[in-house]
Length: 357
Ligand code: NAD
Ligand code: TYD
Image 1 (cartoon, rainbow, N blue to C red):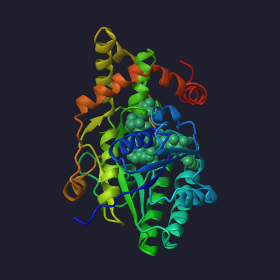
Image 2: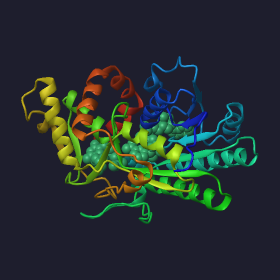
Image 3: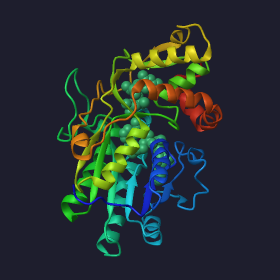
Image 4: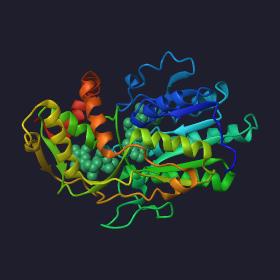
Protein backbone atom coordinates (compact mmCIF):
# COMPACT_ATOMS: atom_id res chain seq x y z
CA UNK A 1 0.00 0.00 0.00
CA UNK A 2 1.27 3.53 -0.82
CA UNK A 3 2.26 5.91 2.01
CA UNK A 4 -0.73 7.11 4.07
CA UNK A 5 -1.93 10.69 3.80
CA UNK A 6 -1.78 12.30 7.26
CA UNK A 7 -4.01 15.38 7.61
CA UNK A 8 -2.60 18.12 9.84
CA UNK A 9 -5.26 20.83 9.53
CA UNK A 10 -8.63 19.34 8.66
CA UNK A 11 -11.71 21.34 7.62
CA UNK A 12 -14.92 19.46 8.46
CA UNK A 13 -18.11 20.92 6.98
CA UNK A 14 -21.41 20.17 8.71
CA UNK A 15 -19.63 19.08 11.89
CA UNK A 16 -22.52 20.15 14.12
CA UNK A 17 -24.84 17.60 12.47
CA UNK A 18 -25.25 13.93 13.29
CA UNK A 19 -22.42 12.22 11.39
CA UNK A 20 -20.08 15.22 11.27
CA UNK A 21 -20.15 15.60 15.06
CA UNK A 22 -19.51 11.89 15.60
CA UNK A 23 -16.64 12.10 13.10
CA UNK A 24 -15.03 15.07 14.88
CA UNK A 25 -15.15 13.23 18.22
CA UNK A 26 -13.56 10.24 16.50
CA UNK A 27 -10.77 12.20 14.75
CA UNK A 28 -9.74 14.23 17.79
CA UNK A 29 -9.55 11.07 19.89
CA UNK A 30 -7.38 9.07 17.50
CA UNK A 31 -5.20 11.69 15.80
CA UNK A 32 -3.22 13.75 18.33
CA UNK A 33 -1.34 15.66 15.60
CA UNK A 34 -4.46 16.85 13.77
CA UNK A 35 -6.39 20.14 14.16
CA UNK A 36 -10.07 20.29 13.23
CA UNK A 37 -11.92 23.38 11.97
CA UNK A 38 -15.66 22.82 11.94
CA UNK A 39 -17.61 24.99 9.47
CA UNK A 40 -21.35 24.75 10.00
CA UNK A 41 -24.28 27.05 9.29
CA UNK A 42 -26.24 25.68 12.28
CA UNK A 43 -29.44 25.01 10.38
CA UNK A 44 -32.26 23.20 12.23
CA UNK A 45 -30.10 20.03 11.98
CA UNK A 46 -26.92 21.51 13.46
CA UNK A 47 -26.46 21.67 17.21
CA UNK A 48 -23.32 22.69 19.10
CA UNK A 49 -24.46 20.46 21.99
CA UNK A 50 -23.31 17.58 19.76
CA UNK A 51 -19.73 18.74 20.33
CA UNK A 52 -19.96 19.14 24.07
CA UNK A 53 -16.72 18.31 25.83
CA UNK A 54 -14.42 19.21 22.96
CA UNK A 55 -14.86 23.01 22.78
CA UNK A 56 -11.97 23.36 25.20
CA UNK A 57 -9.60 21.26 23.08
CA UNK A 58 -6.99 23.69 21.63
CA UNK A 59 -6.95 21.57 18.44
CA UNK A 60 -10.63 22.37 17.75
CA UNK A 61 -12.22 25.51 16.33
CA UNK A 62 -15.81 26.26 15.32
CA UNK A 63 -16.73 28.69 12.53
CA UNK A 64 -20.37 29.52 11.90
CA UNK A 65 -20.85 29.97 8.16
CA UNK A 66 -22.23 28.83 4.84
CA UNK A 67 -20.45 26.49 2.42
CA UNK A 68 -21.87 28.64 -0.42
CA UNK A 69 -19.79 31.63 0.81
CA UNK A 70 -16.67 31.46 -1.39
CA UNK A 71 -14.89 34.34 0.38
CA UNK A 72 -15.31 32.71 3.77
CA UNK A 73 -14.11 29.34 2.48
CA UNK A 74 -11.00 30.88 0.88
CA UNK A 75 -10.21 32.78 4.09
CA UNK A 76 -10.45 29.59 6.20
CA UNK A 77 -8.40 27.52 3.75
CA UNK A 78 -5.46 29.97 3.87
CA UNK A 79 -5.70 31.24 7.46
CA UNK A 80 -5.92 27.73 8.92
CA UNK A 81 -3.50 26.18 6.39
CA UNK A 82 -6.06 23.49 5.58
CA UNK A 83 -4.65 20.39 3.91
CA UNK A 84 -7.81 18.23 3.90
CA UNK A 85 -11.58 18.72 3.73
CA UNK A 86 -14.18 16.20 4.82
CA UNK A 87 -17.48 17.46 3.45
CA UNK A 88 -20.58 16.42 5.40
CA UNK A 89 -22.60 19.67 5.22
CA UNK A 90 -25.88 19.02 3.47
CA UNK A 91 -29.62 19.10 3.64
CA UNK A 92 -30.11 15.43 4.46
CA UNK A 93 -33.78 14.53 4.94
CA UNK A 94 -35.70 12.98 2.02
CA UNK A 95 -39.14 14.07 3.32
CA UNK A 96 -38.05 17.71 3.51
CA UNK A 97 -36.63 17.48 -0.02
CA UNK A 98 -40.06 16.46 -1.29
CA UNK A 99 -41.79 19.51 0.18
CA UNK A 100 -38.93 21.98 -0.46
CA UNK A 101 -36.29 20.90 -2.98
CA UNK A 102 -34.68 24.32 -3.63
CA UNK A 103 -32.48 24.45 -0.55
CA UNK A 104 -31.23 20.94 -1.36
CA UNK A 105 -29.93 22.12 -4.73
CA UNK A 106 -28.42 25.25 -3.19
CA UNK A 107 -26.59 23.54 -0.33
CA UNK A 108 -25.82 20.13 -1.75
CA UNK A 109 -24.99 21.03 -5.36
CA UNK A 110 -23.94 24.70 -5.35
CA UNK A 111 -22.31 24.46 -1.89
CA UNK A 112 -20.22 21.48 -2.99
CA UNK A 113 -19.13 23.28 -6.18
CA UNK A 114 -18.09 26.39 -4.22
CA UNK A 115 -16.05 24.26 -1.81
CA UNK A 116 -14.45 22.28 -4.63
CA UNK A 117 -13.49 25.43 -6.51
CA UNK A 118 -11.95 27.22 -3.53
CA UNK A 119 -10.06 24.04 -2.57
CA UNK A 120 -8.85 23.53 -6.14
CA UNK A 121 -7.51 27.11 -6.17
CA UNK A 122 -5.61 26.49 -2.93
CA UNK A 123 -4.29 23.20 -4.25
CA UNK A 124 -3.04 24.65 -7.59
CA UNK A 125 -1.48 27.67 -5.83
CA UNK A 126 1.23 25.30 -4.59
CA UNK A 127 0.88 26.67 -1.05
CA UNK A 128 0.13 23.20 0.28
CA UNK A 129 2.31 20.12 -0.27
CA UNK A 130 -0.52 17.61 -0.53
CA UNK A 131 -4.31 17.92 -0.32
CA UNK A 132 -7.40 15.74 -0.03
CA UNK A 133 -11.12 16.46 -0.49
CA UNK A 134 -13.53 13.81 0.69
CA UNK A 135 -17.17 14.03 -0.36
CA UNK A 136 -19.39 12.13 2.08
CA UNK A 137 -22.32 10.76 0.09
CA UNK A 138 -25.06 8.22 0.26
CA UNK A 139 -26.13 4.91 -1.31
CA UNK A 140 -29.38 6.71 -2.25
CA UNK A 141 -27.65 8.11 -5.38
CA UNK A 142 -27.93 4.60 -6.89
CA UNK A 143 -31.74 4.59 -6.69
CA UNK A 144 -33.74 1.56 -5.62
CA UNK A 145 -33.05 -2.20 -5.69
CA UNK A 146 -35.47 -5.07 -6.20
CA UNK A 147 -35.54 -7.96 -3.77
CA UNK A 148 -32.02 -9.11 -4.70
CA UNK A 149 -28.65 -7.60 -5.67
CA UNK A 150 -26.35 -5.03 -4.12
CA UNK A 151 -25.09 -1.55 -5.07
CA UNK A 152 -21.45 -1.64 -6.21
CA UNK A 153 -19.28 1.37 -7.02
CA UNK A 154 -20.07 0.86 -10.72
CA UNK A 155 -23.87 0.76 -10.31
CA UNK A 156 -25.20 3.65 -12.46
CA UNK A 157 -26.52 6.68 -10.56
CA UNK A 158 -30.34 6.69 -10.65
CA UNK A 159 -31.44 9.01 -7.86
CA UNK A 160 -35.19 9.16 -7.22
CA UNK A 161 -35.74 11.92 -4.64
CA UNK A 162 -34.72 15.58 -4.78
CA UNK A 163 -32.35 14.80 -1.87
CA UNK A 164 -30.60 11.92 -3.62
CA UNK A 165 -30.58 13.80 -6.96
CA UNK A 166 -28.81 16.73 -5.29
CA UNK A 167 -26.24 14.36 -3.71
CA UNK A 168 -25.73 12.65 -7.10
CA UNK A 169 -25.17 16.09 -8.69
CA UNK A 170 -22.53 16.85 -6.06
CA UNK A 171 -20.88 13.44 -6.55
CA UNK A 172 -20.63 14.09 -10.30
CA UNK A 173 -19.00 17.47 -9.67
CA UNK A 174 -16.47 15.73 -7.42
CA UNK A 175 -15.77 13.25 -10.19
CA UNK A 176 -15.49 16.09 -12.74
CA UNK A 177 -12.97 18.00 -10.59
CA UNK A 178 -10.81 14.89 -10.47
CA UNK A 179 -11.16 14.03 -14.16
CA UNK A 180 -10.79 17.60 -15.44
CA UNK A 181 -8.24 19.14 -13.09
CA UNK A 182 -6.66 16.08 -11.47
CA UNK A 183 -7.93 17.48 -8.14
CA UNK A 184 -7.35 14.86 -5.37
CA UNK A 185 -10.97 14.23 -4.46
CA UNK A 186 -12.51 11.05 -3.05
CA UNK A 187 -16.12 9.98 -2.65
CA UNK A 188 -17.74 7.69 -0.08
CA UNK A 189 -21.31 6.39 -0.45
CA UNK A 190 -22.71 5.03 2.77
CA UNK A 191 -25.91 3.26 3.75
CA UNK A 192 -28.30 4.46 6.51
CA UNK A 193 -26.56 5.44 9.75
CA UNK A 194 -27.84 5.22 13.31
CA UNK A 195 -26.33 6.22 16.65
CA UNK A 196 -26.04 9.15 19.06
CA UNK A 197 -26.89 12.75 18.05
CA UNK A 198 -29.16 11.81 15.13
CA UNK A 199 -31.89 14.37 14.65
CA UNK A 200 -35.24 12.78 15.56
CA UNK A 201 -36.83 13.29 12.15
CA UNK A 202 -35.03 10.14 10.88
CA UNK A 203 -36.56 6.70 11.40
CA UNK A 204 -34.71 5.28 14.42
CA UNK A 205 -34.49 8.35 16.71
CA UNK A 206 -38.03 9.40 15.71
CA UNK A 207 -39.37 6.01 16.80
CA UNK A 208 -37.38 6.04 20.07
CA UNK A 209 -38.60 9.57 20.82
CA UNK A 210 -42.25 8.76 20.08
CA UNK A 211 -42.22 5.47 21.99
CA UNK A 212 -40.86 7.22 25.10
CA UNK A 213 -43.53 9.94 24.71
CA UNK A 214 -46.22 7.30 23.88
CA UNK A 215 -47.05 9.03 20.60
CA UNK A 216 -48.09 7.32 17.32
CA UNK A 217 -45.30 5.64 15.34
CA UNK A 218 -45.80 6.60 11.66
CA UNK A 219 -44.73 3.74 9.35
CA UNK A 220 -44.83 4.71 5.68
CA UNK A 221 -46.77 2.52 3.22
CA UNK A 222 -46.63 -1.21 4.00
CA UNK A 223 -43.48 -0.91 6.14
CA UNK A 224 -41.66 -3.41 3.95
CA UNK A 225 -39.04 -1.05 2.52
CA UNK A 226 -35.53 -2.27 3.32
CA UNK A 227 -32.53 -0.27 4.54
CA UNK A 228 -28.96 -1.41 5.34
CA UNK A 229 -28.06 0.02 8.77
CA UNK A 230 -24.56 0.98 9.92
CA UNK A 231 -23.45 2.43 13.26
CA UNK A 232 -22.21 6.01 12.85
CA UNK A 233 -18.91 5.14 14.58
CA UNK A 234 -18.21 2.56 11.89
CA UNK A 235 -19.00 5.19 9.25
CA UNK A 236 -16.51 7.56 10.94
CA UNK A 237 -13.84 4.84 10.83
CA UNK A 238 -14.59 4.29 7.14
CA UNK A 239 -14.29 8.00 6.29
CA UNK A 240 -10.96 8.19 8.13
CA UNK A 241 -9.68 5.12 6.25
CA UNK A 242 -10.63 6.56 2.85
CA UNK A 243 -9.15 9.98 3.69
CA UNK A 244 -5.82 8.48 4.71
CA UNK A 245 -5.48 5.52 2.34
CA UNK A 246 -8.05 5.91 -0.44
CA UNK A 247 -6.94 6.47 -4.01
CA UNK A 248 -7.80 10.04 -5.21
CA UNK A 249 -10.56 9.83 -7.80
CA UNK A 250 -11.94 6.73 -6.09
CA UNK A 251 -15.49 5.96 -4.99
CA UNK A 252 -15.94 3.77 -1.90
CA UNK A 253 -19.21 2.12 -0.90
CA UNK A 254 -19.70 1.79 2.86
CA UNK A 255 -22.39 -0.42 4.38
CA UNK A 256 -23.30 -2.59 7.31
CA UNK A 257 -24.32 -5.78 5.51
CA UNK A 258 -27.29 -5.41 7.82
CA UNK A 259 -30.61 -5.25 5.97
CA UNK A 260 -33.85 -4.64 7.86
CA UNK A 261 -37.43 -4.06 6.80
CA UNK A 262 -38.71 -0.84 8.41
CA UNK A 263 -41.53 -2.59 10.25
CA UNK A 264 -39.10 -5.09 11.78
CA UNK A 265 -36.85 -2.29 13.05
CA UNK A 266 -39.84 -0.47 14.55
CA UNK A 267 -41.05 -3.66 16.26
CA UNK A 268 -37.54 -4.31 17.61
CA UNK A 269 -37.18 -0.79 19.03
CA UNK A 270 -40.67 -1.09 20.60
CA UNK A 271 -39.75 -4.36 22.33
CA UNK A 272 -36.36 -3.14 23.59
CA UNK A 273 -37.96 0.00 25.01
CA UNK A 274 -40.83 -1.91 26.62
CA UNK A 275 -38.20 -3.89 28.50
CA UNK A 276 -36.03 -0.90 29.42
CA UNK A 277 -39.03 1.20 30.52
CA UNK A 278 -40.69 -1.64 32.44
CA UNK A 279 -43.79 -1.54 30.20
CA UNK A 280 -45.80 -4.66 29.31
CA UNK A 281 -44.23 -6.40 26.30
CA UNK A 282 -46.27 -5.45 23.20
CA UNK A 283 -47.62 -2.17 24.55
CA UNK A 284 -45.41 0.08 22.37
CA UNK A 285 -46.23 -1.90 19.21
CA UNK A 286 -49.82 -0.71 19.67
CA UNK A 287 -48.60 2.81 18.82
CA UNK A 288 -47.65 1.75 15.26
CA UNK A 289 -49.73 3.65 12.70
CA UNK A 290 -49.42 2.92 8.99
CA UNK A 291 -49.52 6.27 7.16
CA UNK A 292 -49.59 7.36 3.50
CA UNK A 293 -46.43 6.30 1.69
CA UNK A 294 -43.62 8.72 0.87
CA UNK A 295 -43.84 9.67 -2.85
CA UNK A 296 -41.10 7.95 -4.89
CA UNK A 297 -40.21 5.83 -1.83
CA UNK A 298 -37.15 3.67 -2.71
CA UNK A 299 -37.95 0.04 -1.95
CA UNK A 300 -34.59 -1.39 -0.99
CA UNK A 301 -31.00 -0.25 -0.45
CA UNK A 302 -28.13 -2.69 0.11
CA UNK A 303 -24.41 -2.04 -0.22
CA UNK A 304 -21.58 -4.20 -1.47
CA UNK A 305 -18.70 -2.90 0.70
CA UNK A 306 -16.13 -5.45 -0.51
CA UNK A 307 -13.87 -2.72 -2.00
CA UNK A 308 -13.55 -1.12 1.46
CA UNK A 309 -12.72 -4.48 2.96
CA UNK A 310 -10.23 -5.60 0.31
CA UNK A 311 -8.45 -2.28 -0.37
CA UNK A 312 -8.58 -0.59 3.04
CA UNK A 313 -9.14 -3.46 5.48
CA UNK A 314 -12.29 -1.76 6.83
CA UNK A 315 -15.18 -3.74 8.29
CA UNK A 316 -18.02 -2.75 10.62
CA UNK A 317 -17.06 -3.31 14.26
CA UNK A 318 -20.56 -3.09 15.78
CA UNK A 319 -23.10 -5.87 15.70
CA UNK A 320 -26.56 -4.39 15.22
CA UNK A 321 -27.70 -5.93 18.49
CA UNK A 322 -25.05 -4.05 20.47
CA UNK A 323 -25.33 -0.85 18.40
CA UNK A 324 -29.10 -0.47 18.69
CA UNK A 325 -29.07 -1.27 22.41
CA UNK A 326 -26.38 1.37 23.10
CA UNK A 327 -28.18 3.87 20.87
CA UNK A 328 -31.47 3.44 22.72
CA UNK A 329 -29.63 3.88 26.04
CA UNK A 330 -28.03 7.07 24.69
CA UNK A 331 -31.43 8.58 23.83
CA UNK A 332 -32.81 7.56 27.22
CA UNK A 333 -29.84 9.19 28.97
CA UNK A 334 -30.00 12.35 26.83
CA UNK A 335 -33.64 13.39 27.10
CA UNK A 336 -32.56 16.99 27.63
CA UNK A 337 -30.79 16.98 24.23
CA UNK A 338 -33.87 15.46 22.61
CA UNK A 339 -36.11 18.10 24.22
CA UNK A 340 -33.86 20.88 23.04
CA UNK A 341 -33.60 19.81 19.39
CA UNK A 342 -37.27 18.93 19.11
CA UNK A 343 -38.56 22.30 20.26
CA UNK A 344 -39.36 25.18 17.90
CA UNK A 345 -38.88 24.48 14.19
CA UNK A 346 -39.03 20.71 14.67
CA UNK A 347 -42.44 20.89 16.30
CA UNK A 348 -43.79 22.97 13.41
CA UNK A 349 -42.35 20.52 10.86
CA UNK A 350 -43.63 17.44 12.64
CA UNK A 351 -47.13 18.82 13.16
CA UNK A 352 -47.21 19.85 9.52
CA UNK A 353 -46.27 16.26 8.49
CA UNK A 354 -48.64 14.32 10.70
CA UNK A 355 -51.02 16.85 12.23
CA UNK A 356 -51.42 17.48 15.96
CA UNK A 357 -51.94 14.05 17.55
P1 NAD B 1 -27.49 16.32 9.31
O1 NAD B 1 -28.68 16.87 8.61
O2 NAD B 1 -27.62 15.73 10.67
O3 NAD B 1 -26.36 17.45 9.41
C1 NAD B 1 -26.07 18.34 8.36
C2 NAD B 1 -25.21 19.47 8.92
O4 NAD B 1 -24.89 20.36 7.83
C3 NAD B 1 -25.93 20.31 9.98
O5 NAD B 1 -25.07 20.54 11.08
C4 NAD B 1 -26.22 21.63 9.24
O6 NAD B 1 -26.24 22.75 10.12
C5 NAD B 1 -25.06 21.71 8.26
N1 NAD B 1 -25.37 22.54 7.08
C6 NAD B 1 -26.49 22.50 6.31
N2 NAD B 1 -26.41 23.42 5.34
C7 NAD B 1 -25.20 24.04 5.48
C8 NAD B 1 -24.53 25.08 4.77
N3 NAD B 1 -25.11 25.68 3.70
N4 NAD B 1 -23.29 25.47 5.18
C9 NAD B 1 -22.71 24.89 6.27
N5 NAD B 1 -23.32 23.91 6.98
C10 NAD B 1 -24.54 23.49 6.59
O7 NAD B 1 -26.87 15.26 8.29
P2 NAD B 1 -26.15 13.87 8.60
O8 NAD B 1 -27.17 12.81 8.74
O9 NAD B 1 -25.12 14.10 9.64
O10 NAD B 1 -25.42 13.63 7.19
C11 NAD B 1 -24.13 14.19 6.94
C12 NAD B 1 -23.71 13.84 5.52
O11 NAD B 1 -23.67 12.42 5.36
C13 NAD B 1 -24.67 14.36 4.45
O12 NAD B 1 -23.89 14.84 3.38
C14 NAD B 1 -25.48 13.14 4.04
O13 NAD B 1 -25.88 13.22 2.70
C15 NAD B 1 -24.47 12.03 4.25
N6 NAD B 1 -25.05 10.70 4.60
C16 NAD B 1 -25.95 10.58 5.61
C17 NAD B 1 -26.44 9.32 5.95
C18 NAD B 1 -27.42 9.13 7.10
O14 NAD B 1 -27.90 8.00 7.31
N7 NAD B 1 -27.71 10.14 7.88
C19 NAD B 1 -26.02 8.19 5.24
C20 NAD B 1 -25.10 8.36 4.20
C21 NAD B 1 -24.61 9.62 3.91
P1 TYD C 1 -35.12 7.88 6.88
O1 TYD C 1 -34.59 7.73 8.25
O2 TYD C 1 -35.82 9.15 6.52
O3 TYD C 1 -33.90 7.59 5.89
P2 TYD C 1 -33.91 7.42 4.27
O4 TYD C 1 -35.20 7.78 3.71
O5 TYD C 1 -32.84 8.39 3.88
O6 TYD C 1 -33.55 5.98 4.04
O7 TYD C 1 -36.12 6.67 6.60
C1 TYD C 1 -35.69 5.32 6.69
C2 TYD C 1 -36.86 4.46 6.23
O8 TYD C 1 -37.93 4.57 7.17
C3 TYD C 1 -37.44 4.88 4.89
O9 TYD C 1 -37.84 3.73 4.17
C4 TYD C 1 -38.65 5.72 5.26
C5 TYD C 1 -39.13 5.07 6.55
N1 TYD C 1 -39.76 5.99 7.53
C6 TYD C 1 -41.00 5.64 8.08
O10 TYD C 1 -41.60 4.61 7.76
N2 TYD C 1 -41.55 6.50 9.00
C7 TYD C 1 -40.93 7.66 9.39
O11 TYD C 1 -41.48 8.41 10.21
C8 TYD C 1 -39.66 7.97 8.82
C9 TYD C 1 -38.94 9.24 9.20
C10 TYD C 1 -39.11 7.10 7.89
